[in-house]
Amino acid sequence: MKKKALILDLDNTLFPTKIIGEELFKPLIDFIEETGEFSGDMVAFKKDLMRKPFQKLTPAYKLSETIVQKGTEILRELTYRKNINPYPDYEILKGTDCKKFLVTAGFTNMQQSKVKQLGIEKDFEEIHIADPDKSVRTKKDVFAAILKKYDLKPEEVLVIGDDPDSEIIAGKELGLDTLLYDQENFNPDYKGHRITNYSELRRML
Image (tube, rainbow, N blue to C red):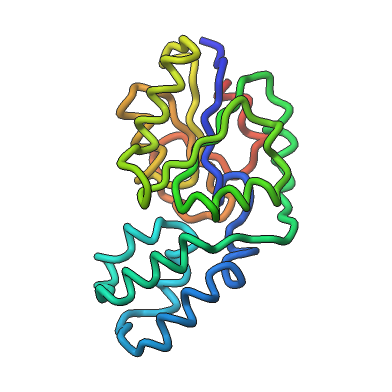
């Protein structure tokens, strides 16, 4: 069945987070290093921070309560104020004849600033931020609400994102088709539907 709607992630799906990550997260990294309490692999932590919510990293890196509390306070206020360029192939995605919904997870101020600096607000029917610091609402909850509000059948919707353990799982649990967008080649061995450029998208629509 022809797809009527696309549900899209933001980071590493519409733009490469690495182009802003070092500057964006500098206040947090500086604080962590100043505490002297971090004993993990900082290089790996920085890479993960650009791909995973901070809340998911706290147990994996055994962050102290001090780092978690203060780190969360820092992240609540972080915003990005420079222009951001989307992936060059975003124009192909933008031109598809489907309703588009942006569903991202993270701190509200930060994610809103990324959307604003990308200049993509008008490209979407709705933009949702699932902020675990404010609500227990998950991406899966948002997906389900979109289907209900717009009277969409599961087979009419395609979920696109870069994280097999986040939006891809959420989509599958709701019976939606999913597509891993992997321009950064994070998951070369992924067994499901995977593309590295939106020029490959039409076969899924």
